[in-house]
Amino acid sequence: METAVLKEQLKKQLIEFLNLTDLKPEDIKDDAPFFGDDGLGLDSIDSLELIVLLHREYGISIKDPKIGRKVLVDINTLAAFIEENRTK
Image (tube, rainbow, N blue to C red):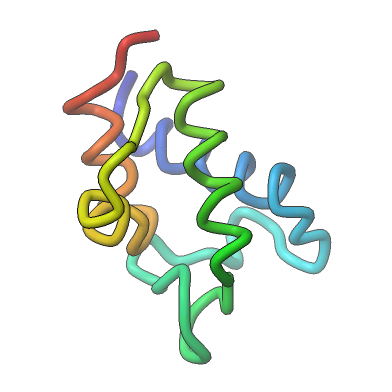
């Protein structure tokens, strides 16, 4: 899958899985941080939901919290990680 298509798909999945109904995919910048006040404002529960999403949709398991912190940064890092580790 082309990277741009994957990023668009991820934005739609974020909105759906995390119930971010006030956002549209075009509202989410590729480099906008998932966590913190200057980004999407996600929290620790959302990070667990993202891990479930990765497993269910892409066959990727994240068991090491250190890897999770490196991967769950923004759309760019998440898409790169999926492209490197995808099993589905």
